[in-house]
Length: 418
Image 1 (cartoon, rainbow, N blue to C red):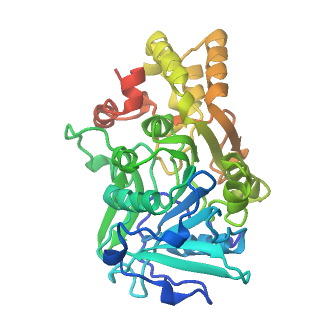
Image 2: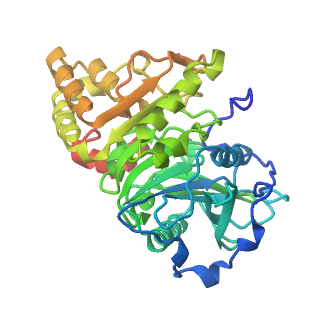
């Protein structure tokens, strides 16, 4: 662990300033202007599309996590790096961090390629500098970056790590001020990512996040809080093969970036499961509040049997769902943010029979590739039941949140909120 701090990757607006800079020794002469580079093909960087994989770290750090996300990139540089031959895998970093003046001073995000050159030195080849007006926590920018990556680096497979603040399936800004939220009839929108500029905060809505992805990714790993809901995985099905995420908050240290490329690029086949297990193990060896982690890896192509069974069980145990005592259900939240409970625990407390719970275990085994949790979280709640998914508990929600939730793909498939 880099420090004894317990900052977390939910949306917490803090007016702190951190200087964003490249590692010493990296070639600064490789900067190119975005307006000249978009649509171009860096020919010397394009190897056979059948042999290589591409990993993009999308680091939306123009917020209170900026110092941690900068350290993540430095740790990534200290791990295994690919070369720059035409057949080598590709490691790309999209980074947006505050400038010296803090949130009131515009800063330019960059897209860089990180590799080892012939002399064995780490090189950060800056491919694109985006304009200072760029909002990284926007679907338009995510689409622009991924489109450039797809066109400039054809490959057999692509994966993405998304690192920022997040609040799972909740509507934009609901987490901070739920009492101010009024459903306006718009289609379902969820919140992931955050950019803070001056006194304004911007968030990507997950429906737009999914629609912005211009190709099917092999995996998405969220280094962000509260993304581990069944609602999130179901929304992303069709856009990624696997999704890795946390049901509870994520301590600000996040993933183990020193070993990340070994699992995702150095191996012949990307291994996101080992990234998830490394994440869990680095926290499970800690003590006190620092021994706090939840993580699961989901096969998004195998979610339909779960949705089908849950539809049946939600109908069968409707009365039980309406009268659950929330204090008896496994929770993954703190500070009264009561919108994240364990899926299996909800059904068990709704009165599901042993036979029906066994059916649930079978379909969970079919789509949950990996899961891990510490015994408790930040000394605030114990973890006794862990299905690999969090979920909304309607009887402890709100009328406005119910109206919103009805528009989610998961609810349309299962009818959790009738």
